[in-house]
Image (tube, rainbow, N blue to C red; front, top):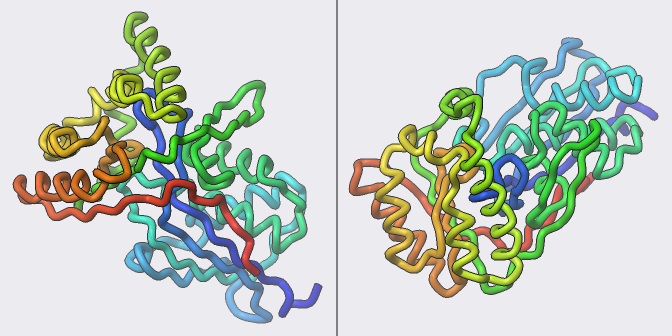
Length: 309
């Protein structure tokens, strides 16, 4: 392969995870995209270099510390393939950083997919999901970005197990994204190390209710499922205006409202015809607390990553 041929481009969707009772296992691909290209230059510095745009434009990070390169290196290393020098990455992203929409997971998926395409590793979707999960620590953000749609994913015997989840066509996922960031490290630190047996039992029931509720649009099941007991009670205090925003969503027709991922964004599940009213109400509620926010409704079924060149 000549130097001029050593390039690849991939598009990866955002994702929302920890969906209600689906803590660390249920996620949904979101219609915001990261596009990344890698090429090998004939000359120049040997270390990887990045040109970043969109939501990543202000990211000042050494190339070797970028999530995309880390995943690229991990995929190549697992296949025992040498990593080329003088790699040049161009990344454009619509995914807000630090807002609970899977920006780091999208980067991990992009890096693994670029390595597979550029270096001929032959990784299938499951192989890319396993690289991303090993780096992220859990599969609920990674798998929607790989497979698209809503997914149920877990690790067992060192393997990623994933299944698509049906989402009733009458349902909409509405996001409200505040101006402030919630760092993942801080959100994880808010969680206790153990949960009481009664809480674990409630969480298991809510997880089952979530799968059933998404498939059937059963509002009672969804309302119960979206009222999380494992992580939201500990993280909501980190999100200014959480209670007001959730209440506004419910008052305007949402079936339930919760954190997107670990936050700071919030997600409401509602009927399609109520999506605009719910999103606008969430933004207004944040504005009343002095926080600027934006809203959007994601497409019902978003495709997973795509190699485009």
